[in-house]
Length: 343
Image 1 (tube, one colour):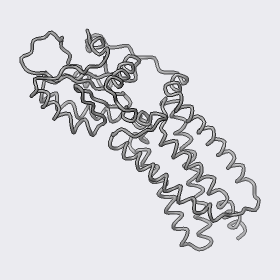
Image 2 (tube, rainbow, N blue to C red; image 1 turned 30 degrees about the vertical axis):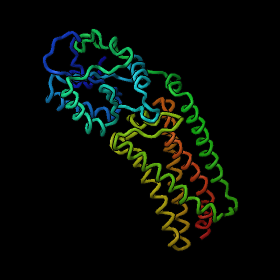
Image 3 (cartoon, rainbow, N blue to C red; image 1 turned 180 degrees about the vertical axis):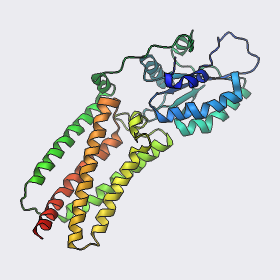
Image 4 (cartoon, rainbow, N blue to C red; image 1 turned 90 degrees about the vertical axis):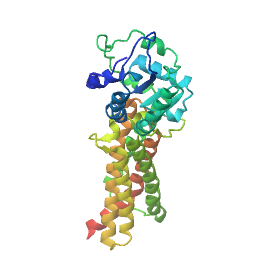
């Protein structure tokens, strides 16, 4: 199987395939790397981790790359996951299979692969993993002269059906968020007296703290490349390993969430120390931050079922929390705006 054109050089390194009947005096370690061309952690492994290993071990190290975004690659990947009994919460890429050992992420692969190679060579070599249909997939592959055709892009419906349960849930949340945003805008336009609640005021830092913890966890996953604990619904690893997990390809979306929730907590805390006018301005600021966060969450939630084709339960949790904060900060902000207008 072939890598995308942007990784042609890496493909020459990854597909050091020789006929299984070749007579080699030195032991050989063979492995399979499952990757996605849009996964930044996969690119780190392919462009930074593997080249030095190939230089060190030469023909004694053979690794073939399998693109999981192609139909054949996805089928082989699912077969490997079942054969190797990989848990549901550890099914992200990059995933390297060497013998019966499965390594995942841009931290575990660089840290453990060199030692596994040395152990394999010392033991007389390691053959291709026992993955159903792997032998058929590798038979007759010629990377330089027989590249695979580029698969047709998935339709929106096909993306949604890749994770029907998780994506259906994200669509329901998306609809709820859009309706909430419209209802909040309509309520803001109504200049009627507002009854403020002390309980509502204290719910703002509580929900913000929960959102902060979720955002910190997602940031750690995005930066480390470790598989996330996804739970029974969705495939958060597919979302976290997509190009949309980084704003402008640089800032992890989780980090943006950390900054947003931290700003909400700090603004709420600072408001306790301000004058009446300062408190009203802080309440407007809390509502403004929640509104921006909700709109951005709507955008991210739209991407999951319709563009990425996978849903992150952690991301949906953050989206629901941000929408709840929008409602909680609405009436205090309306009351604050009324008082400031009357001054």
